[in-house]
Length: 439
Image (cartoon, rainbow, N blue to C red; front, side, top):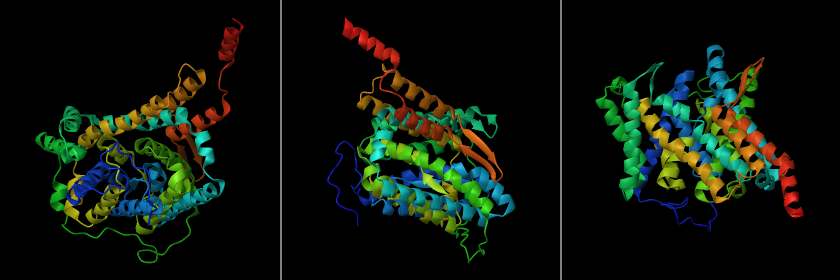
């Protein structure tokens, strides 16, 4: 049982421990499910895994994460894109048993780091991550996804399609209208209503493929890959070496998401329930996914964007989303219907979701009165923003495959180092200050 929290954020519709009425609860949870669905099932499709089991493991991972973090953090755990390259390579050689071993190894890396953080404490976090580092990182997280949203809303495969652009823009504008002019519960599910409206527009433009829905069975059992039942485990050192190091990349991105949630909810999750618990939650979610047949999982920016727009932060809504993900993985028609949502609809919604995340980073800078007349602040923010948004990634070729550190990971590490190394004032600023004193 979670400890009773004394703080309550009265500026939001539903705070973390507020329970919505049952009817509202269903709508709000399904809204989160729609927001993350496209990305979560895309990963297994690219790798060659069953989307149903990815949906199931994302729901299980979400419930595990919420339980381990003592129901303090409203986060959804979906399939991670960071591991696609090694998973594709492993799928072609050793198959899923190797991917499973790598996925479990990823989770174990998280648990090792969580243990270290537990014994070291988290007092270093405030020093390493002040507003001048957090704000630009959060902005970069949102804006680095802008190209993905734009591609979803314009590209039909490898070809530009004006119909996609029209559907994407109309979806975005209608969702803006819903957020501005609807009130009550309808306003709280404005994202879901925007997706539905976009879907109907996409149908009118003739870009929705219903064949998957027609051919899908009403009930289906996800293709579980459980060790000692579906296969006999064997040692795959190449899987461990190619996937485990990438855990440090997703770990950095996870911390970025926690920073965003800290700002949204007016809390410090690094201290309560503690970074060690959030890392443990992520790690256990990936271990569970590897034992069930899914890919590694991580927290999702799409769902953070939904919370930012709706101002509904209730952890119970995320619990409902996880339960619906598990349920829908067994209902073929429903899963196929959600899967048939075309990319321009998701792209149009993503314009708002990712933009709101970026705006949250800007708010961190404004609320903390960060002075950009100081060269130190200007240097840190400039490098973090451009490297993170531009995805100036570090790619290393090893004997076990390619190790790719994303621009966000590089920007985060660089921002932390610059903050610790750079003096409060540059030489020229000190010289000017001394000249003023002499006058």
